[in-house]
Image (tube, rainbow, N blue to C red; front, side, top):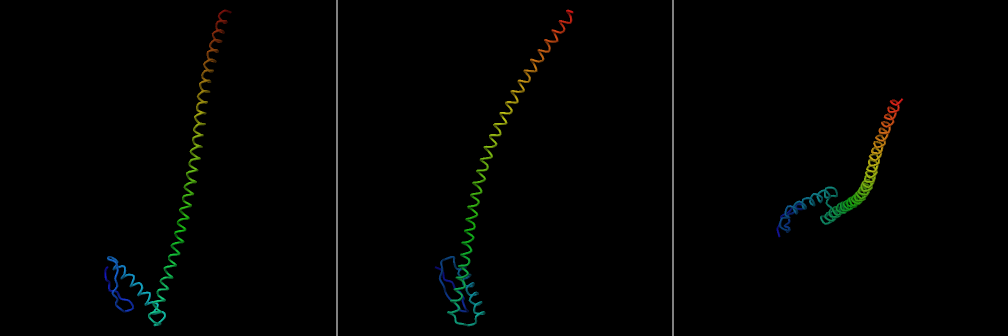
Length: 148
């Protein structure tokens, strides 16, 4: 334990605290003394005990207000986290749906490519047959022309 000399209401006190907490205790005491002096200036000298009680009540009121605001902010944070998780789930679901849709479109595209290739081969085959047929007709026409 460490001992710390502090001043409160123009009086010196020797207080004990854990090692390393000396500066914190001094800071807290200065804050309390400042609040006490502010009330003393505002209310006059109504007695040390009454001023200490009022100072304590104000500090506790500030503490509870702050605690309530922290609780509200934590709730807002929890709500935001929940909304974020829902948004994340929706985004994943949307992406999975789009991935499936893209997969189906790729399958259709492959099918169309295959159909086009088959039709192109069929067209070339028909063109070849037509060309050969025309060549035969021309040969036959030439043969007939020569005979006459």
